[in-house]
Length: 68
Figure 1 (cartoon, rainbow, N blue to C red):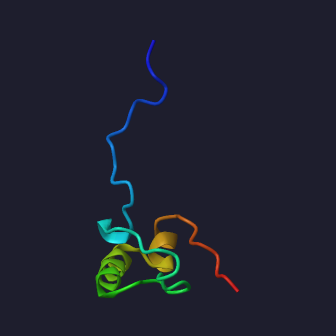
Figure 2 (cartoon, helix red, strand yellow; figure 1 turned 45 degrees about the vertical axis):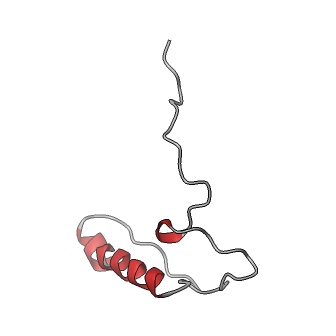
């Protein structure tokens, strides 16, 4: 009989964004997409990989709806 959920490799116990330790709630900049320049660079890189709505539609996919 095989396991339904095989064991995973151990992960860092407190890995935050970009592999760093997460900030305590008291010091985190809530409501901000990034906490510092390292996060900003990572977000910029991630956004370059995102497809536009037009590109998604050309592939026959439905883009996310606009939020109000």
